[in-house]
Length: 140
Image 1 (spheres, helix red, strand yellow):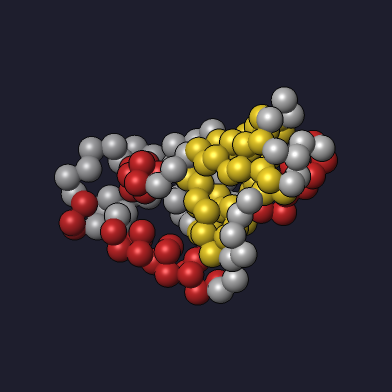
Image 2 (cartoon, helix red, strand yellow; image 1 turned 30 degrees about the vertical axis):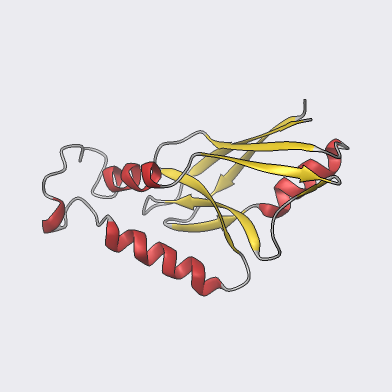
């Protein structure tokens, strides 16, 4: 069963597409029918499948989550206890809990069975950049 570790460098909050890397991994495996499991090894970012045609979708998602879970130094978030790693850390954990750290994508005909406008994204929830590790695991 093929497996690969991707390291992605983020520049702060936002969505970082890696569909092309996952596609290449599946193609190189030679597996025609299976399941790609994608797992991010962190608790302050997440994974999502989202539209990859209009960048406004990514902007709106980032803005929505920023309004839904503002930094812990926002007056509405003063109840947060975990603040030692900065005002963006605990909100990042909440955002990660609301989304996903693992995805399963079917492989059909040697390709990811994503829809026309779907892409795979790392959703960085921290304000500063990070090195993020994503595990790709393909089973047939």
